[in-house]
Image (cartoon, rainbow, N blue to C red; front, side):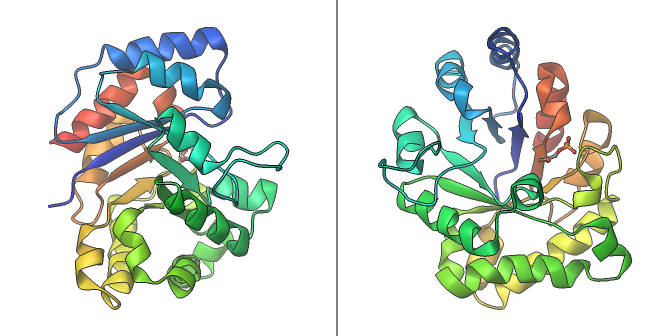
Length: 251
Ligand code: PGA
């Protein structure tokens, strides 16, 4: 059985004070024991959040990491080995905001994916189509291509230690959510693509849905057979709302 997972992507939000408040709020939640819960603060606050959540059963991840695994001369970047050393477990790779706003290519993302795994982090590979691609009927092709770009280079076994987040770009931060069936259809296609290479890996990998998930729609989404949890943006900035989403994943 796959363990459900709920991940909170704080993006570029937070001040020292608001991070203290949010961390305390998360620490006070009663979380379902069977759910893997993780938060992804801005890198500036990672240490603070790791300290604040000690013993609370919530993992911490980074939103980005360098293309090289080890520390060295690479101005402005944070090495995945440094993230692992301070206690991070995960790193997001290929969030659409980084693909689109920062212009990260599949090639760069592959380097980040590999460096993360080499450093002992679990990459959370984010994939998803734009509205124009969905309207053109290209969703499965786009998502399949983003997935293939990793499989073709590193092989299917790379997904024995990775999480995949399907996030339709048109649903991120827009209040528009894919319907549970729309999301399930893509998740099933992703799992099928993986299964064509290795059934065991496909069966074990956690597939998260992201895009305007909130407490009010989480249960319905997480009830679909191939949706193993969520990657939550806006709603993860409120501890009570995030806690309710985690509980939805536990039911
Ligand atoms: P959202 O963001 O929940 O605010 O739509 C999700 C994400 O970008 O990971």
